Amino acid sequence: MRKRVIAGNWKMNKTLTEATQFLDEVVKSIPADEKVEAIVCAPFPHLATLVEKTKGTNLKISAQNMHFEDNGAFTGEVSPVMLKDLGVSHVVIGHSERREYFAETDETVNKKTHAAFNHGLTPIVCVGETLEQREANETMSLVETQVKKALEGLTNDQVAQTIIAYEPVWAIGTGKTASNEDANEVCAHIRNVVKSLTDEATAEAVVIQYGGSVKPSNVDELLAQSDIDGALVGGASLEADSFLQLVEAGT
Ligand code: PEP
Image (cartoon, rainbow, N blue to C red):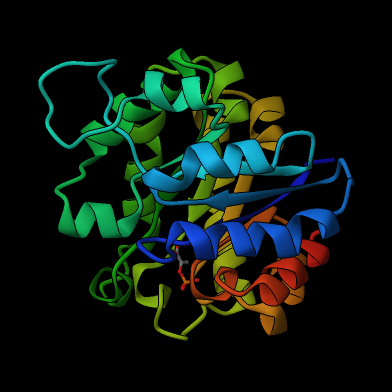
């Protein structure tokens, strides 16, 4: 039985004061249920404080990006070594906003995924098609390429630990959600792609999230789908109440 993973992606939102207030509101109510993992993906400057505040709880702290090198002349970047040292457990890799605005490519996603495992961080690898690609019937082939490239060179064990987030770009921050059936169809396809790269046990183990305008009112039906194991949530993760409802839906 795969665990459910509910991750809130705050993007470039919240001051440190707002972030700590949020944690003060939610941390006591995060269920101590092994079947659900709750994660907050916070801006870099807040990570150390949030890791400290969540010690001993079932709420994990993730970065939203990182560089793939350990250190060096990369002004403005943050390395996996730094994240690990802070006690961060997860890192989002290849979010569509990073692909669109910050020149993230399948190649850098692959390098970052390897770097995450090299430093004991769990990668949340984002894939998904644009509206144009969906309308051109390219969703399945595009997502397949993104998944294959992202996972290239990983061991089966590492693939099994990777969280893959299927996020149709047209559904992110737009209020438009993929239908349950469409979302599940793509997630099932991703699981098949993983199987073709590895084996049945690995494909059955890998956690696949859906992301794109998930909110408390639609999360139950999405999580009820056979191949959707969790959600990566932007807007609806910013309010404590709403985030808790999403996590509760995973229990
Ligand atoms: C996201 O940021 O990954 C996301 C899915 O955002 P939203 O839930 O706001 O669509």
